[in-house]
Image (cartoon, rainbow, N blue to C red; front, side, top):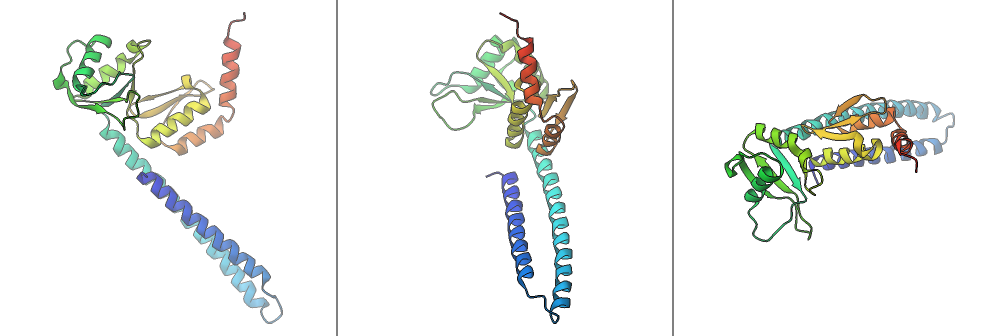
Length: 238
């Protein structure tokens, strides 16, 4: 479990525990006999409880905000460490393969970048556990300029079965998938580790956090149905 998930889980557990205990306390207060002797004490205790409850909720809100800032900062730092990395998908996998040579061959022959040498790649390996299917090839370039050139030339691979993508962190990858699900595949892409969304009003937004995506979904709740209707309307009649 990553740090973000651990922090989120801890915060949710704390919130659930607090809610449960406060609900139990409220029920106990309601069942206490409010006779003349105890009425004033119960009333005072009830006021203290309400004030305490408000204080705790304010604290919880502040902690959640700080946690979001922390996780976004950590995610940005991790994304920065992947600045010179790209993933190559769809490349056949063989036993005892030379990853760097494979990467250089694709860059030269498929992506029309003739001057690439093994020295231009600082590290190269398959990503993830072997599942019987070709795993993505992680390529870390020695220079950001070459990485950028490869990224610009990625459209040359169209129709080849090979795809180049950015190496997103898990929170960003999940956010990217959710954005595509809501706004449509063609309306979402990545650049420099940021998710770019073409909104229904034709404006573009760059986002880096789930909170930003939630705001856009709230602004455009019917984006998926709108895109589907638009695509259907644009299809030629038979």
